[in-house]
Length: 190
Image 1 (tube, rainbow, N blue to C red):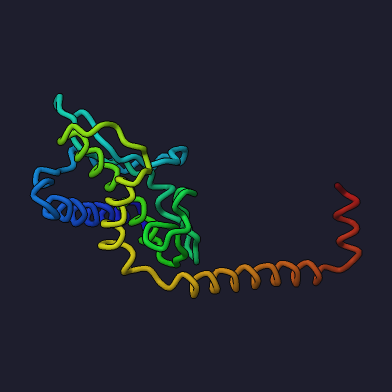
Image 2: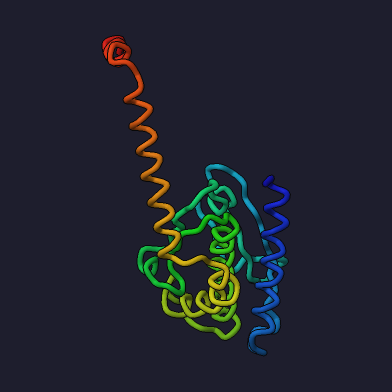
């Protein structure tokens, strides 16, 4: 899939997540993203969700490191922060669907934006970046938008391990097919 297609998918997910947040409770009915940026720079490794100053006001926004959010094809282990990676509800997972990893990044950063919006609107003191409040917002978004789509963790882990074993076996087989004299010539030429 190309950048335009991935950006269209990301925008659609963000529209749904944003609508969910502002309809979730009357406390958040004025939640609207003032900034949504997709950064394709290969050096950009982290995404961000929080408050941005737009036209002199602090408003929620997200900036997604798209190269990191879109994995290579195949079964992937998608990681979360170490402190909660092992949790079933908001932790990492295995998947063969690249959109799942994108959704992880979107729900994670939207949870930050939601948390910062609440803190700003209700004058709540600064919170721990991935603390209990963040995890509560993130859990709501994950359970609504991502977790129902995920395959069985155990099943995907087994598939990923099987593929690794097959790749190792294929590499070993290819190496053993090379005549011994060729191996020694290559080693001697180094």
